[in-house]
Length: 310
Ligand code: NAP
Image (cartoon, rainbow, N blue to C red):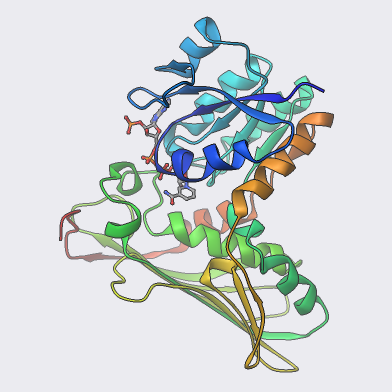
């Protein structure tokens, strides 16, 4: 079978760091083109926009939308209308509601639509899910704190409406949480810290629960310098379980069970190729819904202005 010809739309940090190498190692996939207003990859056909690529570029079968979230829906709609399979970087959109028409279009055309949650493909997440399925969880604590200047330098979109601010990384923790816990979860309170000069939060404290009252807390902070934390602690009836390093490490009590290099994007592309074979949809909006509800319920505090340069 000829390989799936994929165009990357939005050729920024994540496209370069993860999508290009992952496509290169995925059987049945090839990078056919790049669409981005300013960035290109030597040796790969380029167009400034997806519309121009669809009009003048080489033939493609699928599009990976790696733009900022605010413009993702429009790119995905264009690709689906042109008969392409679509992979969406996380978050799948800037709002929950805008995904509905994409689902309708993909189903009608029988084209794959894949809302990726890369953290769910971290190596310790599935072992943790299986281990915890056999235990009674009594409490969950998420600590997701990173230095925005290190991980998102110069990314103005992250501070604009729809850019999510600290929920851009925080939603990764919520994607793991909602993968591991099968029951519906909901936000019960949220405190959001907005820099005086920005339209998205720099820190957030959430409380979540389920129908049985499970206490879940989450601390998200973009102002972390020094050691970075991407940890989820589970208290269980038979002792503590910790998923750390963004899902790369699993500790059960004092024993280390999984400690692996993260290779999430190869897993995402294997899944995408599978979905395109049958034109399937894989879209779980639970993490985005939790973030939207945190904005709905959130108590807002104004904190000191944030400048990209310290
Ligand atoms: P980025 O470095 O700012 O890259 C985004 C790219 O998209 C830029 O080159 C931008 O061009 C381009 N773009 C904007 N609008 C476009 C359009 N309409 N058509 C084509 N290209 C367009 O951002 P990023 O860090 O790669 O993040 C992109 C997405 O990936 C975000 O949703 C983020 O949450 C997700 N993600 C990022 C990371 C990470 O570590 N960075 C990890 C996982 C997931 P201009 O700059 O010229 O506007």
